[in-house]
Length: 116
Image 1 (cartoon, one colour):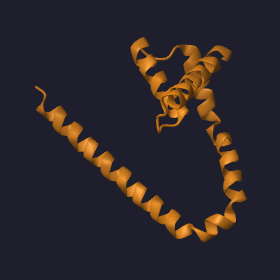
Image 2 (cartoon, helix red, strand yellow; image 1 turned 180 degrees about the vertical axis):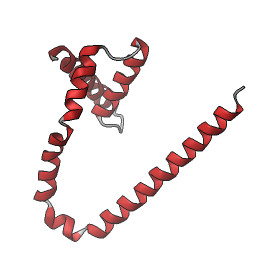
Image 3 (cartoon, one colour; image 1 turned 45 degrees about the horizontal axis):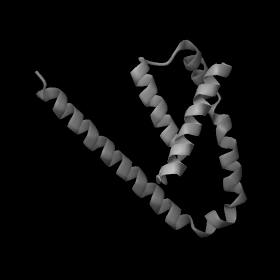
């Protein structure tokens, strides 16, 4: 388990270094996750240790939201004053995500049908 957590943290660190070093407008952990995905694709998938550790982390994922929830509660007065803009952003981003997902699915289905 320790090796798998080390692998996850090394990829997160690599993402942070690349994002900050190259001045990319992308969070380091997201870039690290993309690098991990690329490494896993090249490797042929995760090993049993990494898979068990990832499943353990996913099983306790709700605990990782506690700090975010606490931060939201610390800024409740700001949320109360800016709720219309937040609501609009939430609704528009949800609709945009649904539209992009539908377009990608449609394109993939057309591509699948055109293959012999």
